[in-house]
Length: 630
Image (cartoon, rainbow, N blue to C red; front, side, top):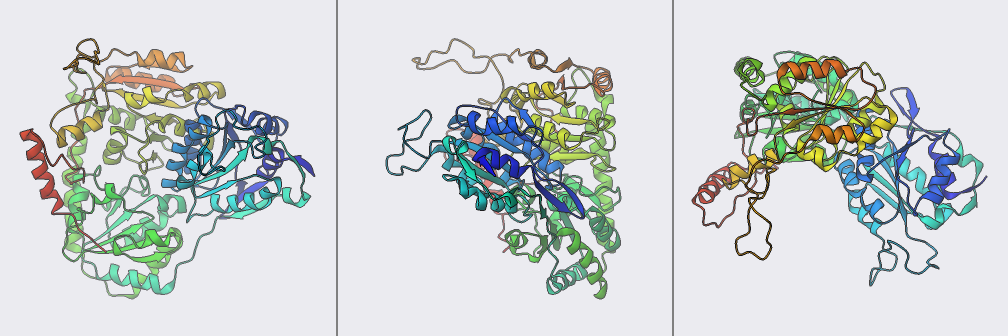
């Protein structure tokens, strides 16, 4: 078959399928992109010619398009993803942040950036990086450290080996992430006689690695011997579909379960052993129990510093760690005794194996779990309580209204700033309510595109998709509202307007005691760069009409101030066929109850401020609680 490289690429992608648990689906059902000279004549022509086989979605910002693909992949439990194309130079580099997010979060995305001419007959061309000692380097080499697979196609026949290798990574639960096929703009249009068999339909099985019996028995012995066991559920539980096995194990053995950001919603059953979030943005009750646990079993989690409070959370003098993970490196975190296997299969085997060992008495521990949960319940209720409203709502009260509105099948998305932490702490993600938190990269600008990705993955319009993000994030990246409007995609954006990057303001106050550069304030006078003492950003709050911005980008926009106005806005817009933006002014600096843990963010060691000196001393006390676990 004589096709151009671009035509061959799109034809090949349209024939790839994933198979998981007997379900077969298109691995890459659509391509998103923005065209420039680096991809319009090659990939652009191919996508036009083959639009029936590969639908194309036009975007506004390349980084956001990668986030759409990541959101789609996460909502699809990594069984499918989207491709993204961009032109050379800045178009390609705009995708690097999205690639980093996908790789950090182990989410499959396929990126197809244009690249500089392979033939080089043209001499230096527009947007070409001219490296003084590495003539074959282009800006696309920036993808290498943030990708799981990278290849530059300088000859057509290289696709014959590059594309199958790319598909293997996209469908690998161990090492998936961003896959980059860098395409010089001239090569995209080169023709080649391809083997017809290359374009036959192909299935890629998403494997479930079986657990090793000896590894299962080792962890079962630890579980049976533990008097204060704790399970931490990560994103791997959700990707594996291991929720029933996790719930059965916890219920049968009476082991409390905490959740990471990625694991939010891993437990769908309400029961006494369901604790909620752990770590820096977890509940104080969960963290209190984690401090005293003598065995911690992490399932599908990497246990980053947020979950472990920078290795200071687990304070039992003889605490042991066990883990279940498909990735051998993650299975050994914190010196854990690991089961390297699929979570669903491993938990099922573990539940059977632990019955062969005499279990320790955990009655007292279970009583402590119930008592801690009973203490947290009224504290959570008070934080969401609308009867205490005096003027503007707090962000916690707004979350309470969103919780009141949420139905089974609905998804709430958050990624950076205060919203993901607050949802981790108080959102009820049981009974089919999905909570999609990206916090491996904590990337501002993910929320709206990811909401679009979730909507593409779940076209059931009776399910509401809510992107919950601060005003700082909205002002940074609102443009994909246009894409949602263009495609008629119902995505609701809820913005608690608190006049700044307030979660970092909170951290700043706890590390320096002084606000600087985080709130959205006017300068107190003209900006004179030659002044010995320039005016500072310490005036009143900026007057920005976020609803008008959203309306100008094609959204149905509402400003709601009172609880009843928020309720009405949510109810009136639930069935709107397109993007909705609800702006809610909230009280700045009104935070949810703290998690009661330490985080390794160091105040200045030398300062002329007594406050900073005091905060540094407090930080060093926290350092003393930091442990090496193995």
